[in-house]
Image (cartoon, rainbow, N blue to C red; front, side, top):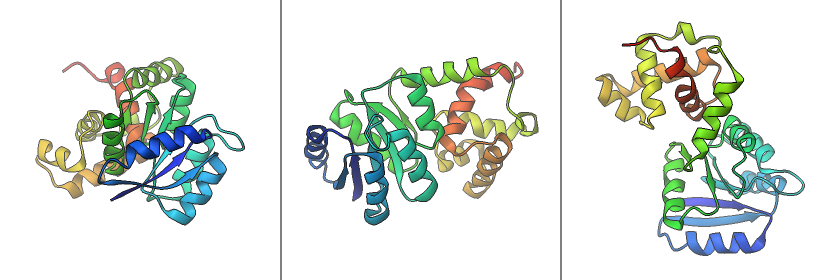
Length: 216
């Protein structure tokens, strides 16, 4: 069972989401928060697997709450669900460690699938939103970040596969190496590039690899 916390300042939205999600046999809504500060407190007491986080809320917004939850509660994933597709919100939320960013018009079956994927550690970004992040990052830097030139060709292969959404097991099978070796590569990639997690690694790969890869 995947335990979900809903964070949204509109009670009707929370009620609607709860009704939809609890039609799924493997999803259970364990709590509701009307602002980011309350969401953090509930994560501490309820230990949900996934937080569905709105962006604009009183007291503390969803971006700030995401930053605190990711920093303090390693076992909880954050999936942003909002009406705002502004590239600054998307980039900020993902930059602080959100595992995904979807709009509220996402069909219920796709939302349920996204919650399951995020719970497993995959990144879920709604149609058109990933492009916003790539454009934002590509226009904000004309050179690769420190550490790029220190990546080995194999680490670059791993990074490309992360960008494709591959799990450690899938990367291991693709490259004929062990999952332990993949984990070591991922750890080093994040360290060398100064990235927080796989989500940031995927964004980096999409926005920079095509600029700095040598032609094959």
